[in-house]
Length: 196
Image (cartoon, rainbow, N blue to C red; front, top):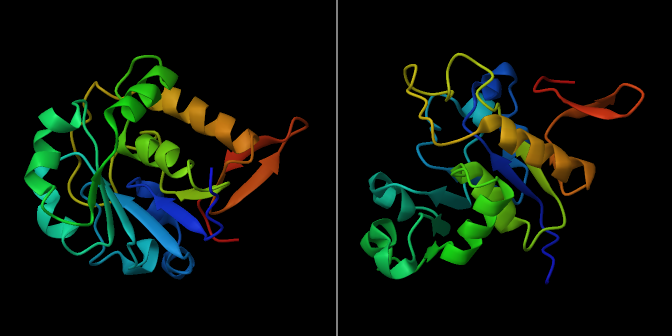
């Protein structure tokens, strides 16, 4: 594996992003990954403005894909059958996350459909020794996303299982949160999305 030493942060869409004005800290990373229907306008102070990588699973984001350098689409289908990739493959900057890779993530999550965020994490760990995360809430808040009205939460994802996987990667020094402090005798990780 060729390791990319450039810094990378993966910005989730959780409401904890609004707990601190971390926009400039996010933009200070060389690479900033966002996914699906992320919002910037009106939230710049909290989420920053930079986007170098986009992951998505929906037809709705083609215009956005044209504006971002590195775009990855994923689905539960092989490349030849993936409608999202077929719709966007004419764009030189769009790549398909390989079907077998997505299936590997599904195995890690015990057969449950993984979130786009989890797929992005495992995908980028192929090239980075360590990634930074922010805005991953595992549905612990009333709203799912920091933008828009209160949204529907489907039954396909299992946030508690994803949290276990991410906690395991933190313990292996593969992931860290933008702001994180160890607590307790066993150095359990507590995620703190607030300014120090």
